[in-house]
Image 1 (cartoon, one colour):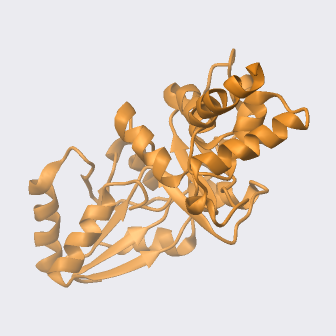
Image 2 (cartoon, one colour):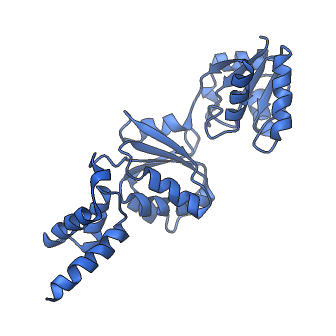
Image 3 (cartoon, one colour):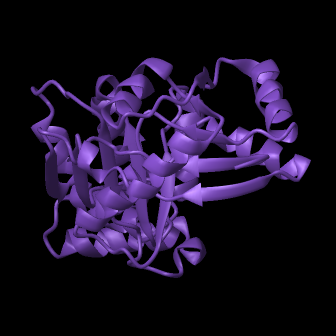
Amino acid sequence: MTGRLYVVGTPIGNMSDMSPRAVKTLSEVDFIAAEDTRVSAVLLAKFGIKTPMVSYHKFTGEQREQAIIDRILSGESCAVITDAGMPCISDPGEQLVKLCRDYGVEIEAVPGPSAVITALSVSGLDTSRFSFEGFLSVTKKQREKHLNEIKNLPHTLIFYEAPHKLKNTLADLLEALGDRPASLCRELTKLHEEVIRSTLSNLNELYKDKTPRGEYVIVVQGNYQNTEISETTLEDAVKKAAALIADGMKPSEACRQAALTSAFKKSEIYKEYLRAYATENKE
């Protein structure tokens, strides 16, 4: 193995998911670039791999990236691994692959488990088209912008989330996307694995008084109910809500339903409904 980068997938929890090819590759390369050498040391020891490691994560900086590239260009082989799953998916390994591409370095994938695909496969939601959205920003403005950009996408949406941010994220998803079928996957392939197939509103209620533990993947149904969403005006959305209310539906639910098939939030539709119909009802 000379002058090549190997992108190696490792287990997302269950050590039995480590492939023979991954073990062979990690044993034969000259060095391993690992997100956390302490975490990876446990994995390597499990399979008797004694290849030296260098730390490579989002805080190591350009100098470390260049050092890795220089070693590869000099003829050494390197495997990049993350703490769990496939590297380069919401992971700093992405930048290393881009640099290797720019330098003309050969890149080879050694596929392994992925939390994204694992969660999708057991979600019970549409798998024909999906979008991985990674971690939502902790910055409120950026988070709102992100959710607004994807709220009307017709395909399944997948998110990663840490336990300490799960409650806020579930609340934000419900507010921005409306109540939709969703699957919450916790600690996939691990001892305490849990998959809850429900709705965003029910998931919010479930974790109202429950402390999140472990790593989560959230899978949410896309907004496929109306392929002409972008052409729906606020007036159209209000008329739809008004018709549902006239049929006996509660205003809040009617505006939520109208929001699912428009580019407008429930609050916007409700505000305009009150303005347009409150005066009419008084007369």
